[in-house]
Length: 361
Image 1 (tube, rainbow, N blue to C red):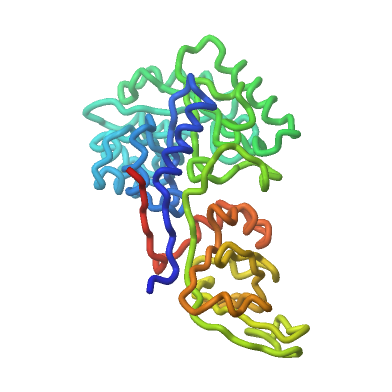
Image 2: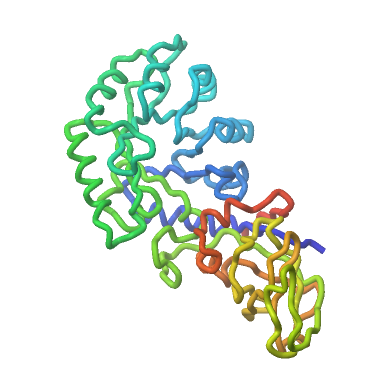
C-alpha cells in the first residue's frame, strides 16, 4: 500500500502553461522552477515543459541539475551568481545571470572569460529586496554594454511585491516608473510574475515569469473560489490506516488538544508534518475521503492525523484514499486553514513522500 504520495498531473501542468500563453500571447514565457519546481520535482517538471521559452531558478545547483537532466533551454539565475569563481561555470553551461548589485557587475568586468555571457539587469522599483536603484540604471547599463564579457542582448527586469492585490495601485506605479526609466532602450523587458500575468496585462512586455500559476495555484489575494482556468498539478494523498471509536469526553492526540463532545468515529490517516503537512492547521481543516469532506481533529503528529468521520464510519475503511489537497480540495484553502501561503505548503513536501507522475496520451 502506498501511503503519502504527491500525484503530479502533467496534463494539468501543460494546460496551465497554455493558459499563461493565452493570457500573454505576445510574450515569451520563463517557467520558474526554483525550490524543486515549487515542490513538484525540478528535472521532471522541466522535461515536461518544453513549450516554455526558458527556465528560471534561484541557485546555481538547481541550474546544474537541469543541465545534468538533459535540459538545453536557456536557464536564468534569478539571484545571479555569488562569487566570481561561478562565472566560468555560467559560461560553460550557457547560464544567464541576473545582475542586481555593484559586486556582481565588478566581478563580471574583472573576469577573464573566453566568451561573453547573457545578463538580465534587475532594477528595484519598490520591492526593496534585490535590484539596483533607478538612479544607478544609466551607469550600470553603460558598463554592461561596454564590457566584453557581456553579450549585447542585455535584458531589463523588475519585480512586483503587491501584484496579487488588484486594489493596490503600487503595481501600476511600478510599471509606469520602470517604463519611463528604460524609455528609448530596445532591450527585452521582463516585469510580470504570475500575479502580474493574471492581474496586470500592461506589465506583460517581452517576457513573463510564470511560477505558482504553472502549478495550478492562484497567486492572487482572495483567490479561493476564483476561476483563472488553472488546474491543480499536485494531488497530495494518503490512506486511512486505522478506524478508532471514541466516546464523549475522550481527549484526542498530543496534549489532549481536542475533546469529543459526543460519541464519534475517527479515521487515522498516514500523513503528518514529517511529510510536510502544516502542523498548525486548525481544527476542522478539511480532507476528502470518498468524495466527502471531513475535518481534522486533535494535534497533527509527525506521521499521523486524526479525522472526525462521525456517523459515516461504516462507509470508510482502512486502506481508503484520503486527499489532503488537490482538484477536490484547493491547496489555497488549506493554506488559509494553516495561516500560511500555498507556496510554503507545496515547497515543504519532504523526501519521504512518493511522487507519481501521470499523463494521458
